[in-house]
Length: 386
Ligand code: TXA
Ligand code: MG
Image (cartoon, rainbow, N blue to C red; front, side, top):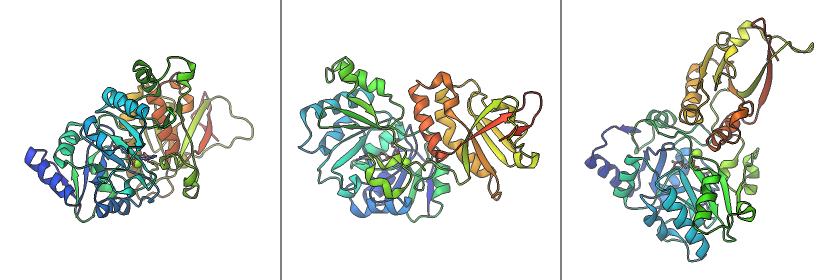
């Protein structure tokens, strides 16, 4: 059975690390989200992760280590001098922290299924003190995806992990409280041609990565240097198209709650003639997740309403988004005709250059599977039109 462990003493962490070394799966907190960890050198432990999550075998796992020095042993001899120096530079600047570096890997210490047979491995050193100590005690590379069912909302509390995996044999969840940052790490591939692909936005921004590589003389501080750090944002509709993806996390439907969810952009104006008014009963079956009071006119009209940050703070949004999506699932439990309306990030005009906001916006877009609806609210009444 799944068990939550609240004892974070040295001896408790030592015994759960020993379980991981022996092949058990251990969920642990990081500063981003909870990870579902297994010994990356044991085929049967790694295959349990794919099995428990329902994750396709083509989707590689990130290897977690206590520090930069530990990560070096996993690089293949094919890694160029530039890749090695970029790894060293970004690792020393941003680790421990929310950054994953993808590099060529051919190590007998990591089974090929971790890198999904690609020959490339994602490496990350999380900043959470419990993760740090746990990884030191494990003393083996720890493969860990986010600890949620495949495609579901990532977990930021031990209870979220338990909710997704309530009864799995020998699954241990180390409860380190709420994750500080709240969305997953930035995933960056350091290519052999001395370019950098940001495959997933996260807590470390493209500008920070570029700045760090320029400071170290690894990229020229000019337009040519800037053009070598690209954000690869793709939204791919089905798993059958996965072969075209730079990173399988680019699936359009990802981070999705078990409730029909759509983005909503609201305009306060007179509706056009063809617009249809929404009935009161219909509105009472809608859960609104708002930000910066974009949809506040709906607060008293809908079934449930929550603003993640009335003052529009992207860090608060990152911290609370995933738990709000799970809250919406709880509200809609047993109510199959309820829906979630999520604020549309494109309407937050002042934040479209903010890299944390863009990272959260990416999750929001995928949580709504790319669906978007415009609504009109009449200025002098509470009528809502679609
Ligand atoms: O913050 C995080 O990164 C969390 C915590 C637990 O560390 N982990 C996490 O893992 O988000 P996961 O598996 O849910 O997402 C990792 C993403 C996936 O989109 C995967 O496709 C991509 O990184 N990825 C991992 N290794 C890769 C590789 N070798 N090549 C390309 N993409 C890779
Ligand atoms: Mg994930």
